[in-house]
Structures are given as structure tokens and as C-alpha cells.
Amino acid sequence: MDGGWEFFKGSLVRGLRLGLKTTWTLVKISVPVYIVVSLLGATPVIGWISRACEPLMRFFGLPGEAAMVLVIGNALNLYAAIGAMKALALTGHQITTLALMLSFSHNLFVEGALCRRLGLSFWLMAAIRVLMASAAGMVLGMAWGG
Image (tube, rainbow, N blue to C red):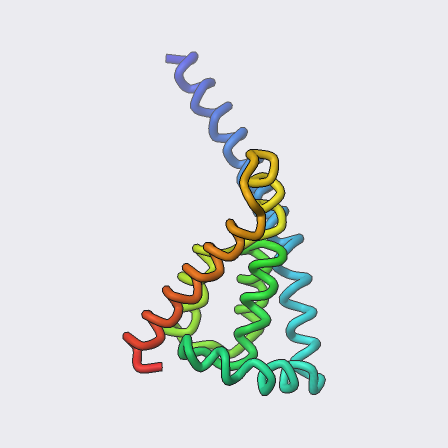
């Protein structure tokens, strides 16, 4: 009986440590991005980005500033994109569309490097993933009347 309890207690402690370590890693990524995007919101920069990207983002039923989320998610990772999403005033439909699009194309440079090591073309892989993300975003945007 004692052996089972010790095993459980050890597993619980290891799990808590790993969970806290993972949480800290995610906080280190998403909080700075959230802060930067929030600070940009106090400047005209997001307005410029929004107006420039509005025509393209309309295909997905998204506001122009959502382009920042896609760029951050594709260049960095999903957690940075989540931090950027949190800093913007997006609806549930818009967040879902961005999440779907980023499930197809995210972290392109890191995953592209892995593909190259496997002998695959970075450009082909990136193009397929971005096209799939775009197609999914358009379908979902149309389904929601965007």
C-alpha cells in the first residue's frame, strides 16, 4: 500500500512541476506578444495594418488587424498568435476562423527547417500549408456570412 501511495505522490509532484514549467514557457511567449500588440493598439500602427490588410482579410470574414495574428502565428508559433488574438477585440467566429487557419499554417520557419532536413521543399510545404489555411478560412468565412 505504501509503495502505491509513494508512486502516486511522486507522479503528482512530477506532473505539477512539468505543468508549472510548461505554463511558465507559454507565459514567456504569449505575455510579451500581448503587451506589444496592446501597445501598438495605442498607436496608429494597428490602424495602418488594418486598413492595408482589410481587403484581403475580408475573404475570411476577418478584420484587417487579424492579419497580424496570422503573420505572428506563421512566423513564430501558436502561443504568440494566441497572445496577439487576446490583445484584439475579436468575436468568437473570428477567433475560430483564425484558429482553424493557424492549425494548417503555423511556425512555418521552424517546421520548414525540419522539412528541409527530411529532404522536402520548404517553399512547397509552406505554399501548401498557406493555401490550405486560406481555403479553410474562406470556407468558414463564407459559412458564417463574412
